[in-house]
Image (cartoon, rainbow, N blue to C red; front, side):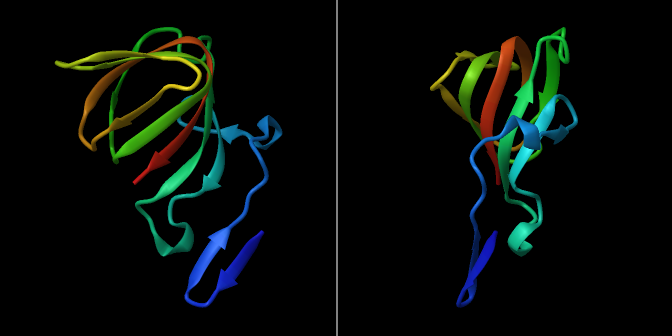
Length: 117
């Protein structure tokens, strides 16, 4: 549901709902804000779900936009290559700058809320 207010626009979405998942590069996503919504191509957000079966080995990921994540359920191990490592579990949050080189391990099936900016 989208409700315009003067020059601003906002969108109200249903709560997190696994029935709304759609395929993503790895795992599945439920978009809250798709890239380009509101004429803002650099801003998006959603819920990402991934299982160890979908990512059975650590995978390297170049962070292509500033990214902030909050773990809702599960367990991720994220290593910033040449830097720190993080074990993220429910309630944990992390933020990565665009261009960061990372290595991700899906320890347990994980759902995170993410924002790309």
